Each structure stands twice: as C-alpha cells, then as structure tokens.
Length: 296
Image (cartoon, rainbow, N blue to C red; front, side):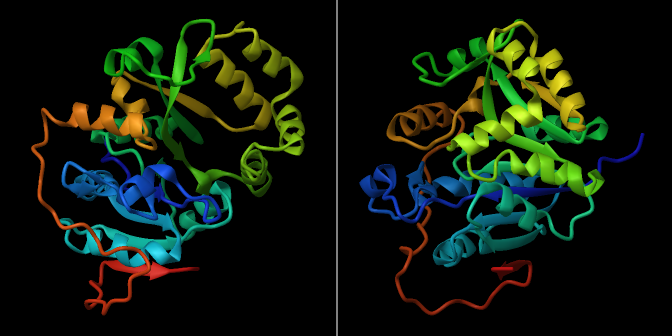
C-alpha cells in the first residue's frame, strides 16, 4: 500500500481590519486568534496539533502583516520540523488560498485559525478523500453537533437524508485542475457571497435545477454534491465526520465557553506566555530557518 502523500495545510487567520472584533477586545487583544484559551493563545492549540501531525509537511498561515511577529513567536517554540510560511492575507479567502498554494504540487488542506478543537483524525479523513476527488468538504451531522453542544446555535444545511453543519475544513487538489476549472471554482467565493452579483454567479455555476433540488431537500448530501460536481466539472467529495466538536469554531464568547469546557478533561490549564501585543515595538529574536515570512 503506497504511503500517504504529504500535505500542505493552509490556516486562514486574516480578519477585517476596518471592524473591531468585540470578542478580541474583551480580552484586550486586537486579533481574536491570540485570545488565551487554557493558558495558550487560541490559534496555538491548532498550530501545535498541525506541527505534530506526521502527514503535514508544509504549513502556511495567512494573516495580516501586523500579526507576523506574534505568530512567529508561537511557531518558533513548537516542536516539529515542518516548513512554515507566514503569508500576508489577501483581500478575500479565494486569493489567500491561491497565493498560499503556490509552489505546492500535492494535496492541500484549508482550515481557519479559530478551529482550536480540530483533531488529527479529521485531517486524515479529508486527506484520504482527496485521493479520489478534486475537492473535499468536511461536515458533521446535526445529532453529533448537538451531542457536543446541546445549545448550539449553528445553522444546519438540510438534505433529504440528514442535516449537516460545515466543519471549516476543506481539501483541494488545485494542481490537478485546469485553468478554467480553477477560475470557475474560485470565482464563486471571490466577493465573499455578500452581493447580488455573487448570487447570479452561483446560479450560473450550479444551475437552477440543482439549486431548487437543494432548496427543497429533494436530494441527499452525496447526490447533491454529485450533481454539482458534474455541473462545474469538479469531483467534490463529502466527508462526514462523526465528531460533532469538529463543527465548532471559537469565534465568539459562547463558542469560547463551549470549547473551554470540552477541552478541560483532556488538557490541564497551562501557564504559557502569550505573544507580545500586536503593534508593540520590540527587538526580534533571530529567525529560525524553518519559518519564513513573506508578503508574496
């Protein structure tokens, strides 16, 4: 049996600079991913798991340049020999992912920096799905999410077979796509889904019939993604994770309390120094060779 292909993981840590984040401000932070959780910055829980994962060969963190020093401080003290790159976040998710994927000829895993509960088994499941697909999307069933968080306020996508929540975890084989395919997939999310223009783009890409079938819950998750795959010329594989905690993003006070409770049995509180405040002048320590910082 061939050994698993090495992965590049892209961590999306960018945030809107023009809007203050009340969750971060409550902790005296400008960046929510540095909020302390069990004695460590929120993003450190994710980065430590990725640094220890034996299939992760390359790690790219997309974040604002002003946060480079803080993230660098975290990565420099972590074990592991992964290649780590800090990349200045682009204006939207699609451009950040495409920039972070440059130079990598293998499968990509994309997640968000607020995924403090992400488990290595979820990474493996998405990576395995990419062996037979161009893209993979991780979801969890409603009953499993409710089992992990009984008072969840998550929005669920209802299909004929079940209701699912997204898990902020995706897989891509961009190197296998043609130019038109990549542009067609990327174009759906270029403006973040907030405009009428984007709605028209979605209809054109997915087709009215497919959207109606999804809207009225006439197809299962697998059938729905199969129809959309044929429409846009990409093989999209659903990955149903049995662990409902994988659908929890720590991006507000309520989710923070839930995550803290779920992590408590497995992790004792640690007293680990937080990185310096973003924007505070300081003298940088010598750069560890394995960590690269760039805006390109």
